[in-house]
Image (cartoon, rainbow, N blue to C red; front, side, top):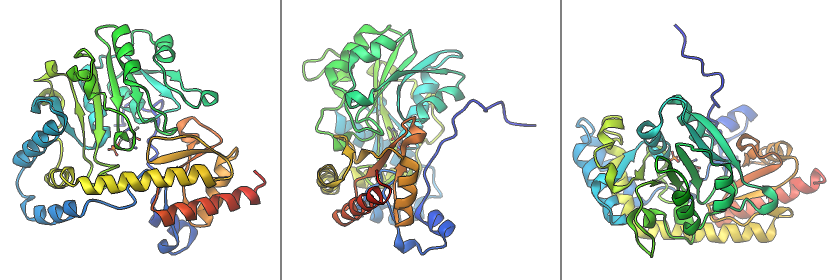
Length: 366
Ligand code: PMP
């Protein structure tokens, strides 16, 4: 027995951790800083750490109550009903649930190129296929309704990533509305706001709910995660906010107890710790500004917790930076050759990254 033919599936590249890199290079892990996976440089909220410790003794029970409490807290945060919140194993899990709920065999999804690989992977699990719309480097990866609609061809889901990974560009809500308006009734527009806290923008939840002058829509869903601004990437916690009309679909698509007791308890503590999120956002804004000002190469404007840098020879630059102890992401795996993505770190980490990158660029004559 073999798994079904997965040869046309893209393998998920999770990026390597400090321990793995240090082991391979025969060096001490303390020599490295990792700015490759858009993790929170301040770690988790201290309140979440306390909650995780306290929750440890109750993990013999299924997470029913904590699950309901967290769902209610998130629903309250967005002023939506509890039924509209689909807790999941990270933002990835939420993307998967949206596919489970919508994709029929041979349906297509429309995704940005370059873009986040898991959209396509997840669609293929459900026997769907992938089509792409281009975000043009020459246009600073600008996202517009017209560019998306030009490529649209009755796809079941249109994915918008705002802020976009790996460029950091965003799409205005008026453009999201136009896309939802001009696509078929049977098309769902998913706005992936994994990096939403770092952008000075309103969430597309406003479109689902008919707020801020928009008409309420039944064809938009929003994905959010606790992995980035909340610093909980390791517990795997994310969610989708879905239209009111989808009320009973969740229990038909979710993995039973979609988020663990530990994840739910950590999420409940983290969602109340506004101070941690605002400190993280402030550090991110400082780091983005510093990199844009001091890197000796083109750095695109970003509203995420990372910046994209045009370095021409991404694999040589990423490798040379890694040898000097700074791990960054070569964007070739996003379908974007010649660029690296650097996560916003603490002030010290950011300064080290910039100094290292500038040395490497000078050494390689780039
Ligand atoms: N969407 C985008 C655009 C992402 O970059 C990521 C994380 N890399 C996710 C979703 C999924 O996040 P999570 O870690 O919560 O699964």
